[in-house]
Length: 435
Image (cartoon, helix red, strand yellow):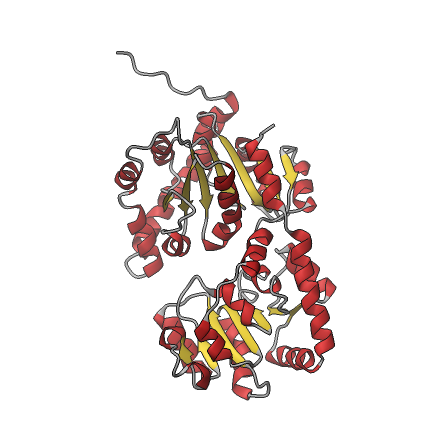
């Protein structure tokens, strides 16, 4: 019997697959994989990354055993990590509701996403995405055979994209966001720009992203907004109760430090130590490893409780609570009076949409300009960039002393989320009736 014919590869894709730059990119991916294996000897996160992919093919085969792709087609959704998953989650849940016979394959790049959501009931299959080499991309797609693929925001894996194109499998990017400094728009970015031709359609967050793509002649774009606004809006309206947190708060004003790093805590911890503001404090560091928790506790110099230690007896008697688990922070903002969001002294701030949907005024460090909502709300006076403990302390005192001003800022934050939600419905209407 003759071998089945190989999929037809359009001429442009053949160039992408065989160009010298593609070979260099693939070499880099291999070296990246080797580096992670070496790092895994000492770094727990790298160890999880490697272990999660060690037997991916065998595990995927077992996962898909008996799958009927004719009756139950597979739709593949990829998220880099937990934040991107939260952006993609409204799409997953809305698509399942409108296509109950379809199956969702959810993949993650990072252990911080997979380890938290590996049992997510909204997807039929959850796994790590293998390393982006041509061979592994082909083998993974041979097994998964998705009807189409959805990538959340900006996790570009070019060998996977080329393999999808070779199968004539449509690829959509949702909540996509581009910035002028990215390599797609640089003088050396011609190869990267050609990779964007492998994408069927971009659903982008704003007009600025659409204009950037138009500047490099990419017109397969629709401005839909950010699906995360739909997610945080749903969280605020379907909020989960935490009775022990209610007991801890004891009816007092609450300051939450969310997704913080050491540099952020250098501002927040002195605020706690001074005792000038009689609030309760909840600290939820981005890294909840025992080493990080211990570091915070040593610098705190105040009595505290860990969330894992909280019970009905001790909940109300302490003023500082450190969250030593993951996956609940987005719900805790319902109890906040004020919040400080971490990351602004590092690469970039973390998610401010989660607190503002509850009407919580937010503080953060100076590196916030990558996020439209942060830039716009700073201009509107709904959130605040602070660089010193003194700045933070003055603004906290000012807001707490003026309930009328606080109420206006809180309403501004809530309204911002209300105005910007709705991206999910626009995307689902397209996916269900593609043009």
